[in-house]
Image (cartoon, rainbow, N blue to C red; front, side):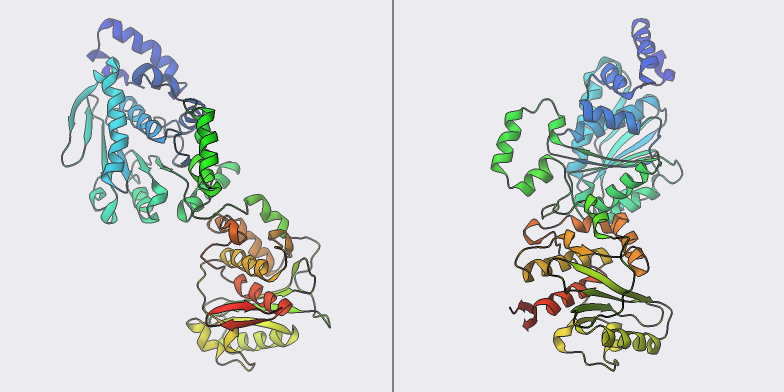
Length: 468
């Protein structure tokens, strides 16, 4: 929208047109886009604009995952024009990991504003150095800058509205830093990207969850390229035929598949847990068990899980325990008791304090039972362990083959799986049953143990091989 304080720069005829448009544009930012920038958004872009409503600042944080051809550059450019023309004195920033990428949005915005008589009348000047900046007659300005070198070019100024383009291709530091640049204004930070895993996917799903639970200050949107009516059905047919499925889903459909295939989706999470299962079941003679331990000393967590690996088509969680702020001798005793109670194969964290603690156990720990812990979350371990199940079984069990209780330590595990920072680990690697490079915090070990308990195992160097 155009601020009414600028009406004196227009002719009477232009002023009348603006006033009519303003009344309509206050109710719908897409009307302002058409009236003042000559740009007609498609249905997906319109939904994003109406929900975020950039000039009003209703949404404070948004993540938009868009397929190639959806039109994110034009949409983010429109947002800056809307804020800059509607809010006198507003300072808006177009940021991206490279200056060239940031400039794409700036050029799209400048083209729209210079190409419309009403908008061009509001331009005061455009400067190119040190950063491209559009100054308007109402005192607002929009600039484009890179986030490289730890956002050194963004330090100091505060902004009222920020977009971060191709956010998923950079690190999370830029996003966290930009949040500090709107602290005083409480302005929106809108992230745009083609879909990427890691932190951007984590944030996207967090915002989606928050929105579903009634938080109207956040927004997550996935825009498949087919929302753009200017792209023909033949184009998508050709892309689907020529591209590998993973690339098509990521680059065209806007799905979060990272470098692997999105095998396990969020709807699989609830199927893992079973209310009928007890959180802890006493050992049963003749059953085969596998257990894994992530060790800590005193203030750190020490966590152990045990799976019953007897059934050919499922893995059932039968025991879990967690220890924190407990001196090592007590953890050691509890761990030794559990290892002896559930005979089978075990795997123990042999990293850092885990190695020190493990060396003091009064149970034998063979070299093949020691693993180098590389996980960052419980969720990572569960996903990685499914790969081991697939390798060991004649046919993959998938997540449907894992059944866990809903209470006790398993309940916390379920909550961890629900939390956004852990949920994306289910979306990895179709070729190896949804397994990513990372490994779960605590469950990687017990699934490894299950594999060995069911089928036997031996090590060849650092690689485990199955023995029939």
